[in-house]
View 1 (spheres, rainbow, N blue to C red):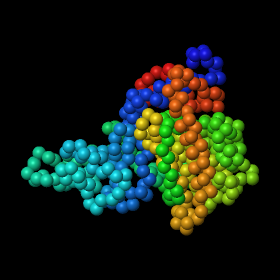
View 2 (cartoon, rainbow, N blue to C red):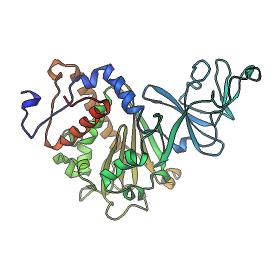
View 3 (spheres, rainbow, N blue to C red):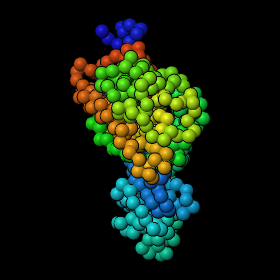
View 4 (cartoon, one colour):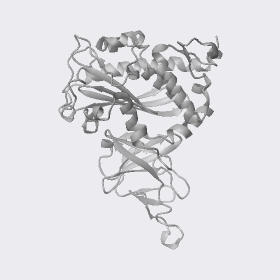
Length: 376
C-alpha cells in the first residue's frame, strides 16, 4: 500500500532519506538550527565576567560569555584575522579578553578588537569593524538562547509561543520559576540517532506501555498511549497511590512554591522546536537540549532543576533523577534501534502514523516548510 492510498486513519511519515541523508541534514543545519532561536547554555554557568562556554549551533561554533556589565554576549568563535578558533575548550574563564593563539589578535568581552601585534601601525584595521561578529541573545527560563540569523525571528512568537500553544498561556510556566531553580544533576547523552527521531519519540506516548514501565506506574494514563502534548493545557495526573515523580513513586522533594493547585500532582511535557524539551512536575523541572552534530548522531544535555535550598542542603535527588534517566535511556535506545531502519529499502518511502501519532505529521509538515520542500 502506497502513501497515496492510505486510509484516513493513517498518515505517511517522512521517507527514510530524511533521517540518513547528510545533504538533507546540511539543509536542516542551515535552514532550521542556524535561523531559529537555539537554547545554548544555562545562565548560571556564566558565573562572572569572563566565564565562557562554546556551543555548536548548526555548522557554527559560538562563544558565549558574560561581559563587564554582567550582560550575556555571544559571538562567532572565529578570529577576524585568519579564521582560527579563539577557544577550543567547552568552557572556561578569561580575565579580561579573548586572545587568538595564532597571531594574538585580542578581543574584549564586548567583542571589540583591543590589541594585535603592530596594531598601531595598521590604521586600516578598525577596532570595531574587525571585532568579533555578534550573535543575538535572549535569557529566558534561566537559559541563554542564541540566534544566528541576521534578522532574528520574534522570540515571543517562536519560543514563548510554543509554550503558550502547549499550556494555553505563558503564566503557567512562570509558576515553576525555572530561572530561579538550581541544577541538581546534569547528564549528557550521546545518541546515535537523527534528531527528528528523538523529537518524534518525545511527542508521542504510543510506545509508553511497551518501554516505560516506571513512567506508566507514576502516570497511569500514559499506558493507554495518550498523546498528552496534543491537548492544550493537559497535564498527566499522578496515580492515586503515587506520592511523587520518582522511580518508585515515593515522596518527592520540596514543592516549588508557585505551582498552582491545578498543576499539583501533574506532569506537563512541552516541545519547543527545534531542540528543547521541558518537563514540569511540582517539585522539579527536567530540561533537555539537543545538539545535532551529524545526520545520525545527537548530543542531548539534560538538567534536573530543583529549588536552590534542595541542592545546597545536599538532599537526595537520586530517586527523581533515576526515573527520567531511565525514561531517557529507554527512549534513546528505541531511537538508536530505529536509526538503521532508515537506510532499509523497506523504509525508502517511510512508514505510517496511527491516530494517536497524527500530531507528528504536523511536525513533519513544519520540517518540510522550513526546508522549502513539499510533503512527500
